[in-house]
Image 1 (tube, rainbow, N blue to C red):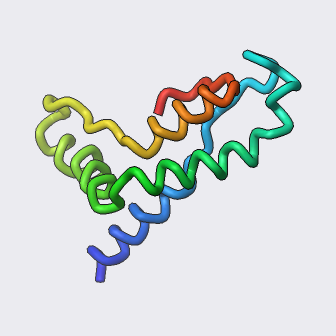
Image 2 (image 1 turned 135 degrees about the horizontal axis):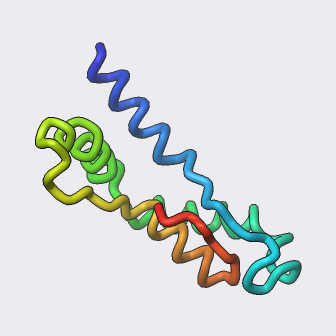
Length: 99
């Protein structure tokens, strides 16, 4: 039961990512009013191009395997967040968050 709840939490947290944006940066007011619509579109694109199983595996690796190995191996990057950030940047939003 504990494993099921951990997997459920992992899957739910991948859908809640919201990038930090500077509404006055880049093109300012010209694109700020479209932020929510662009975010939904970018989330759809990111979901279509990522695997929930692979993203959950990266979460497990980063949060459970790496600490046991004293954080010596490199951190696995999340493709979902990178796709959203890049998509939002290409649409003219100034995204401040890295991951």
